[in-house]
Amino acid sequence: MILEMVDIRKAYGKNVVIPGLSLTVNEGEFVGVIGPNGAGKSTLFGVISGEHVADSGSIQMAGENLSGLDAAARCHRGVARTFQIPQPFLGLSVYENTLVSATFGAGLHGEEARESARAALLKTGLLTLANNGADTLTLLQRKRLELARAIATQPRLLLLDEVAGGLTDAEVGELLELIVSINQSGVTVLWIEHLVHALVSVAERLVVLAEGQIVADGIPKAVLDVPAVRETYLGSDLEDDEADSVVADAGGDDVRG
Amino acid sequence: MARPLMLTIMRLLTPTLEFDMLVFIETLINGLLLGALYALFGMGLSLSLGVMRMINIAHGDFIVLGAYLSSVIVMSTDLGPLASLLLLLPLMFVIGWLLQVVLFNRVVGRDPLSPLLLTFGLSIVIQNLLQEGFSADTRSLPAGDLALQGVELGGMSIGVLPLISAAISIAVFWFINRLIHRSPVGAAVRAVADDQETARLVGVNDKRLFAYMTGLILVTVGIASVLYGMRTPFSPASGPERLIFSFEAVVLGGLGNLWGTFIGGLIIGVSQLFGARIDTGLGPFFGHLVFLLALIARPQGLFKGGKS
Image (cartoon, rainbow over all chains, first blue to last red; front, top):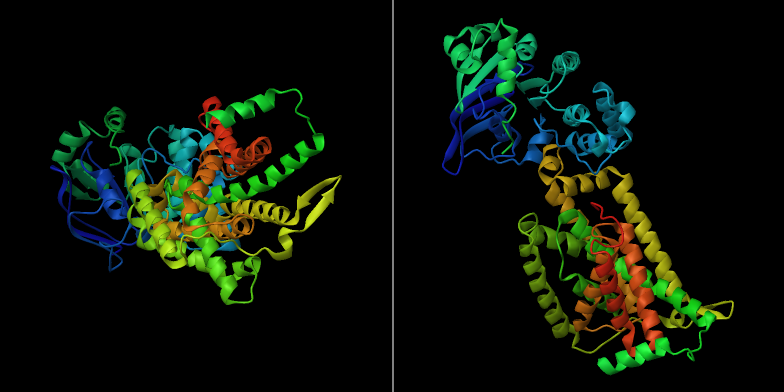
């Protein structure tokens, strides 16, 4: 297995976001993560990527203990994440954004690094904008750059936080294709998304989080059939498109801590 | 202060004061050459401010420390001051690297006050160590023939040493600017300046980067200290004055803007020499005056601040 978290606890002061969570992810899996706002989804990603230090519990990646490692060291071991609100390096060009990842994340040098940085831009459709300043990008382009920058670190475990939010259906379709191809190249994907219909169309496993705990975990179809999941977190029938948009509207402000 | 100032202003306003074009141009050129050196002083400050958001109060004392270390190398080997750079610069790099790892990395990224206090303390420590080791007497680096040689240029005489200093300063600025804006390491440096947390997430080890950065900063300080020590005597207490010149160059040019710092240095240099023309003792005063006036006119500095 690539990720094994046991009894992870994370609190901010008296606010316990994750009281005790255990999660195991196998190499190559495509896991969707859903749950209401404040369920601790983004915090969970923060704990995996090393931005947040868990108060207790153990976290292992491919058998190696990550607990004492900072975010940079975890990146070197193959963890990469994107943010719901894209945060590219605005003072750098688009190309330089991925070049930093290729050089410092993937540990490449010279032409190899440049090639890898360009390849990440090509994959995400940003190559033509390579020399533009990252601050000139639109929101959608920034989301793509966020993804490109994560890919360029050559991750083994990719954590996606709401990459599809705010995109049109066509754009979501393109994005799904891209993420599936990344997954098929062997990268394990953990994806938080409020667009449940998009998520279940590609994820092979769905994890539902509520109040920092896993309330359902399994094949998407089965998970969505769990009455508690349907009622509490998804509101109504999922076959209905309206339900999806309700869920999408409900989300969107699960901010980074 | 009031009397010399009045005198100066009167002289400036007196029409009988002969305006000599040649003297004007000569002063301007010498001012620019001196300013290029001040710019080199400012570069280190500009970098630590732009990249690490850290103000180094001990910056001037590092400049003096570099000059003393060069002086020790010159006295204990056959090397001249310029050749002493070969030993001095690696030494300065190591000092900078160690300082960052042992001290500065503990305080950067927190509130701005901690680095300020730490380097203020460091400044006092360096000054006292220098005084203990080298006494309070002034000394200078032997420039030899270089100090006397000049280039005749249409009736003016421009010193060879200032010319060499300015050329080296420009070269260092060009190189550092290229490093920061045209290399992956430079991109990482700017990324950290942009968003330290996110830079870590894409694998940048910011603390290690800072250590190399401060090593590099002390290398530029080492170069500046030798070039300046060859033309101006120094003592353990000269640090704060060097710091002020550096600050003026950085602030004048717009915080964190490297070429802005260069231009800022030039302006301070030119102002000082024109001031000194009017009254020998008033050089630095005029530098400060121009700095203050420019700051009143453009509080954000003359140029757009950059991240590096």
